[in-house]
Each structure stands twice: as C-alpha cells, then as structure tokens.
Length: 254
Picture 1 (cartoon, rainbow, N blue to C red):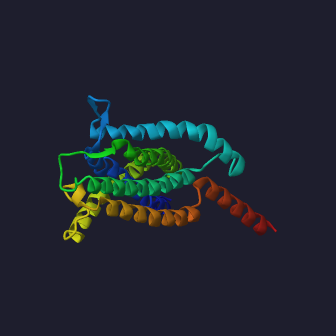
Picture 2: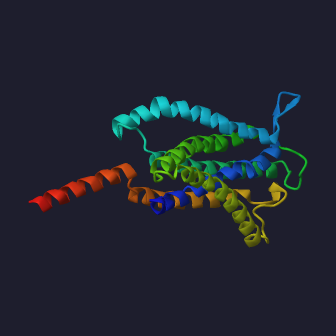
Picture 3: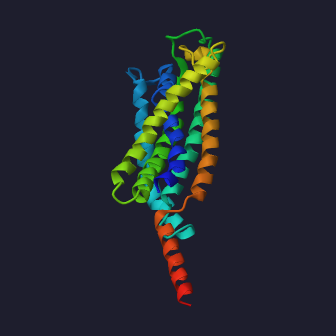
C-alpha cells in the first residue's frame, strides 16, 4: 500500500521546490525594487512572504464557499478528492513561475532603460508589488497542495502507520528544498560563462531559471496526472475486493 503511494509522493516534491524560490530569489528581486510606501516607510524585502498568508486566506474560504459546492454538484458528492486538490496546487505553481519570469523580464527592462544594469545599490524604479501575483499564486497553490497531501497520506496509509503518513508528507517539503539547492548548484555550474544566477541580479538571467522551473513543473504535472489516474483509493479498492470475493463465493456455491 505504501509502495502504491510513492508515485504520488514523488510528483508532489517539485511544488516545494517552487515554494523555496519565494523565500530566496523572489526576496532578492524585492531587494532591488522600489519598496517605498509614502515618503518615509520602506517595506522590508522578506516581508513580502506575508502574501503567502494572504493567498491562503483568500483561497480557503473561496474553496469552501464556491469551489467545493460546485464540485459537489458537478464532480462528486464529496467534493474535490485529495488528489484533485493536489493537482490544482501543482497547476497553480506553473503559473506562479511564469508570472515570476515575466516580472523579472520587466524588471530587467526597466533597469536597462534607466541605465542601472551595473548598479547594485540603486533601486530599480519599479514597484515591488509587481511581485505580489507570484506570491499569491504559490500561497493559493500551498492551500490546495498542503491540505490535499495531508488528507491523502492520512487516508491512504495502512492502519497502525498513521505517523508514517505525516513523515511522508513532511519529507516532500524537505526534499523539495534540497532539490532546489541541487538545481541552483547545477545551474551555476552549467551557466558559469553567462550566469543565470549572478550575485548582481541585473547581470544575471534569473528569468531563465524561472522558465526552467515552469517547464519542470509542467512536466511534473503531466506525470502527476498519469499517476493520479492510475491510483485507486484504499476504500474503493476494498469495496472492489469485497465484491470480487462475494462473486467468487457465489460462483463456487453454484
């Protein structure tokens, strides 16, 4: 039963790799942008991660009061299944990386037009709030993926192994962060002549890194769809086995 869950487990790791970029490179982007609110207040770069919470706060009631009632009518009386919720989260992560790449292209364009490419101390005259969509999309994706994963592993783990289900779920977060570090190291090594991830973001091509993550997320999403279509929930499998056993007994009595 645990082995049957491993393909689902493996295809949820990439989401947390995307998630890791929001607390690293997206914060670095924010550091180079105009973070002023009014004449005297400057937003701390790392505080933009608060929009994660905003994405969750928007998504949860939206799901409870709009998406789930519609899903109960259109799809299933139980609403979206855990695998469907995870799928929605993975799908949103693709658009988050697309939004991040487009914003970075615009940021570099503004930096070039104002002659700030070689400057590390001068802020690019572009509002930091351009980064909000990518934070909101990942936050919304987390609301779907986090709850879907937790529900899936708790429901599908064998009896007496519920603690293992939590371990499987949390391991996707940690492995996703490790994979992010590995991916950064590989990109540094492959693109050292024309670095994507330069110390000065204006000299790098961070947008290519985001495009790479968007492509990996898309491939992973396709693999996830295949794995989720193949997967049979434990309760449905038990029902199917019971029916087969009853049919076999009836046949033997005849």
